[in-house]
Length: 195
Image (cartoon, rainbow, N blue to C red; front, side, top):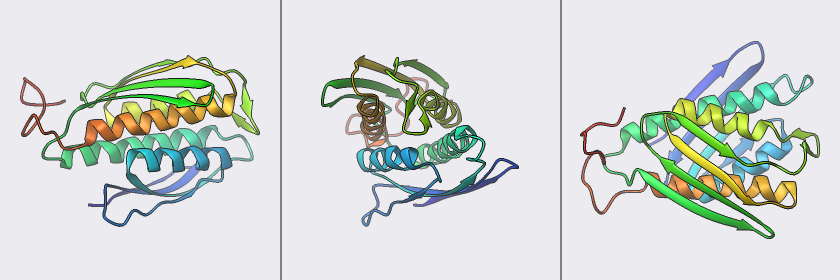
């Protein structure tokens, strides 16, 4: 099943589609922010979520609006995807090494949006990309997907590696949380509802 949304503001114009574990994966990402394209490609591969993203934004100002708005729409689509699942694990954990760096992400499809981001990145920029936007992206995604997520950079090093480890780790943890549960049928909550 494909989920899609558009978002048009004075700052950005986005079209995003996602699908989870389709038989013929399709990924096309064009955000106008090269480093973000690279990170989203890694996220798509490790989460097994097919991504189509076409974005135009006011990158002549900076990359903030484009990065945050993609997080917003991607989060909204992930919420739709979650609601469509008959059975899922709910929780996911991933420790991800990237050479000298090590990241950990823990995901709970809880219905209660909360992000703990303990990832002091080594530098303020990777190329022209402001590294503070990594947290902005994940915060926008987590709030709109209604996830509880803890992200920790356990060991740092090269800033590109640090961010890559975080995106890959998030993708793998999310994949585990979304995958069909062998232990539970229906909503994986003792309350019988996730919201």
